[in-house]
Amino acid sequence: MPIRERLVLPEGYGRTSKTMSWESVRAQLVDAKQYWLATNRVSGSPHLVPVDGLWVDDLLYYGGSPETVHVRAVQANPNVTIHLPDPWKVVVVEGEVRVSTSSPELAQRLADLANEKYAEYGMQHDASAYAEPTVVHPRRVIAWSAFPKDATRFTFTG
Figure 1 (cartoon, helix red, strand yellow):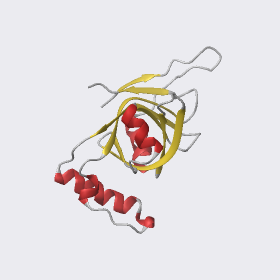
Figure 2 (spheres, helix red, strand yellow):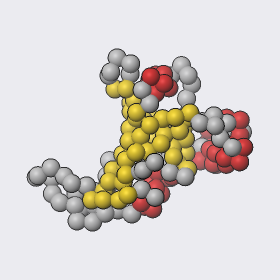
Figure 3 (cartoon, helix red, strand yellow):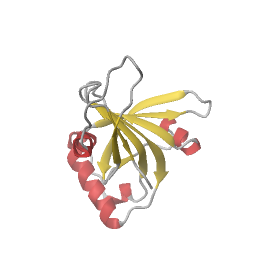
Figure 4 (cartoon, one colour):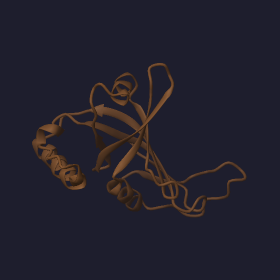
């Protein structure tokens, strides 16, 4: 469970008077169909792209062809930012991308979730597609739904 705190804002932005619950923010991450992924090109310029993904156990699992800019960018610099599409219910995730090895049970769970979440694509994923997934490990999440009243920072340790 991340550490939750009120977001301290610059003068003139207003004050945060309450915090959001991690459960409500997590639910938005789980339910999102797409995630805006910001990476850094080798040249230093930013790259932004929408990606499909699965928020499971407070990690974002996503993929892409090794030929895409975003995959090549995270190989060179694994620091990324994720933003959900809704500008009124803001969730921004800062973290690090790692390629990991899934247990057979986790790989099957991810395939089942992807088949349900993205059924309209007409594709069937099997566990092998998630044997070595690309995973965003969050360091910090910033969220609000009634800015500035509930602007909240969640910090992950470990």
